[in-house]
Image 1: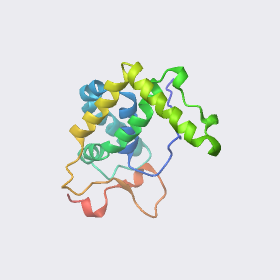
Image 2: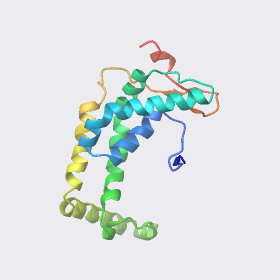
Image 3: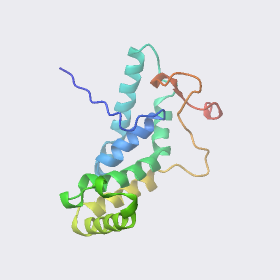
Image 4: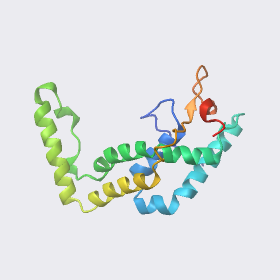
Length: 174
């Protein structure tokens, strides 16, 4: 039996590179990303392509374009990794309590979250290196700011399916 999990938490029309950045930056250490990134990108693209072909379509971008897109979107991975890692690695006493946040207690709530974050950085020996490695990875893989960004954007006027992802016309020949 084959099992597949589908996460609709961040359901949106966007580049598949965003989802992969979210997964890799929130779930893997810098060493794991560095050691396995090429294989993970290759496996993701080949699986994505196979699913589209099985559905009667093909992706409108190459594996090389997808890899470049992943690197161009690495800031997204950094931001969501920086948000997710503390929540994933926190002690039970530092876990988010959404019920205590209300308009009447917003300042107190923010101050408690700040204290909690500082406590986690000083008490959890895994937290600081994990967060610092996120920033190092993004710096290493960030796109050159002098180039125009390449975005795999969903084509306008078409249903939101994986087959509608393509490079914008302005970058199609780049």
